Structures are given as C-alpha cells and as structure tokens.
Image 1 (cartoon, protein in one colour):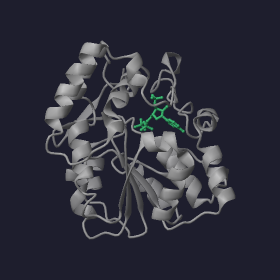
Image 2: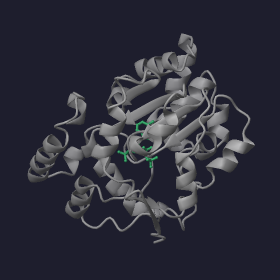
Image 3: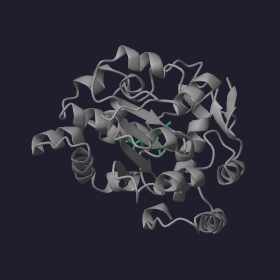
Image 4: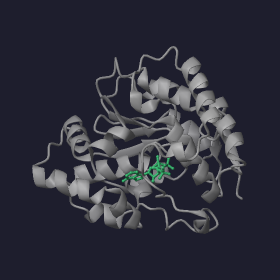
Length: 287
Ligand code: PPS
C-alpha cells in the first residue's frame, strides 16, 4: 500500500496525488467564466460526467474520449498535476473536476460565471462502490471489514471526508447559484438520453438528435468499460491492483441491497435522518 495521506482542513486526501501546496492552490484557483466544473463526492458518477461533458463538447464525436485520458481532459483541481495540464491545454471551455467540498471551494466560485455540475448518488451505493474501490486502490487505506468501513463512512473519517457535509454544502447552493446544475447518478441511469439533453442545454451546447444518440452510445457503461482512456487500466499496478477488481465495477443503482444487512440498513437510515435534518433536498433516490 502507498497509503500516504495529506490532512487538509480536517479532511484526508490521498498523498500520491495531493500535496499541501496543490490543495492550497485549488482554494485560490482563478476560475474563468467559460470553465465547466464537475463537483462530486467520490464514487458518485464523476468519471461518467467527465465522459458526458467531453462528448457533449465534441457533439458526440468520440475521438477525444478515445484518445485522451479523462484525467488530462478533465483534471482534478486539487491534484498536483492540474496546473501543468491546464497550462498545456488550449481547449475552451476548460473542463475541471473536483472532489472538494463547497465550503472550501465556494469563495473562489463566488461571482464567477463558471458552470458547475454537481453529481450525487445514493450514499448507500456510494459506500459500497467506495468499499470495493479501496481494495483496488493502493493509495487508499485498508478497507477493513464492511461494517468497519460503513462506520468510517458515516463518521466522515474516510479519505475525502464526510459525504453528508459534501452533499449538504453543494446542495445548499442550488437555490442561489443559477450556474449550478445538480444531477443524480440515478437520473442518468434511468434516462441517460434525457440527462444528456438536460446537461447540454445547461452548458448552452444544444445537440441534434443524432449527436445526443452518439453521446449516449459512447458514455454507456459497456463503452466506458472497454475504453482504456477512462477505465483506469492504464494506471500502473503499483497504484491500482487490477487483480482485485475493476474501476468500472457494476455501474448499477441499488447494488447496496447485495451488501447491506437489514440491521445495517436501519442503522444507516437512522444516521441519515439525523444528519439530513437540516437539508431541504427531497429525493427518494438518495434514501
Ligand atoms: S471516482 O473514483 O470518484 O472518480 O469514481 P466515480 O467515477 O465517481 O464513480 C465510479 C462509479 O461509477 C460507475 N460508472 C458508471 N455507471 C454507469 N454508467 C457509466 N457509464 C459509468 N461509468 C462509471 C462505476 O462503475 C463506479 O460504480 P460501481 O457501483 O462501483 O460500479
């Protein structure tokens, strides 16, 4: 295991990609009005959204998504290589990704016209996906048993911090930020075609029907699972143990039902209810 972490504002980040300097720089990032920012808690559909946004900006043409890795065409703002990638790229709009919570990134977004897409997913599916990912990702701590992992998720002590803080922070902005689109993994699973149209309208990049169809085709789970520019098989074994599973694992909603016991479900529901008391977001898909 690499298992080196950076503690930043009380949140742990994997140390192979994050440094104190890169994290500090992210908080001072001068957004341009043309930027597109994809924000998400890990395992919520980040990679899927990177693919969708890339495909929309290419009007459904897969040349870019099949030749440039997702971390180069939509780098994570807080990771150390981001500045160099952005400097080397001349494409507009820039697509940038972040797992940072809103309370850290908010100040630099204030007054900016950059378009922000916040992707969220049922937290029970997030924790299951994250648990399996911990087994592959050598840059994350040992997963331990699932009950232990679930406790750490609910306490907010895993890498990238609390799902609840992350979700509530970004969601709290939906009422006031008109350049923020919230979309769920569940919505994309249910109606990918409709979701792509909604995202392209938000990005002011309307597509004709054939272009939408091509986007749907190339960002389907099976296409992405076979695309080495996005399925993480290019990452060396020292960083990801590919014998332990694949990044493109199942791509389904409701997989938590195969992992949670009834007691764990009740326990989760209790904590969810108390932590979400102050949140106005109402969605069956996240319960
Ligand atoms: S990360 O590490 O934060 O970037 O992970 P993230 O991309 O947010 O989430 C990974 C999960 O998203 C699933 N995925 C998809 N599902 C459906 N369709 C498509 N096209 C797709 N692409 C990625 C991926 O399989 C992970 O979920 P699980 O449940 O583990 O399969």
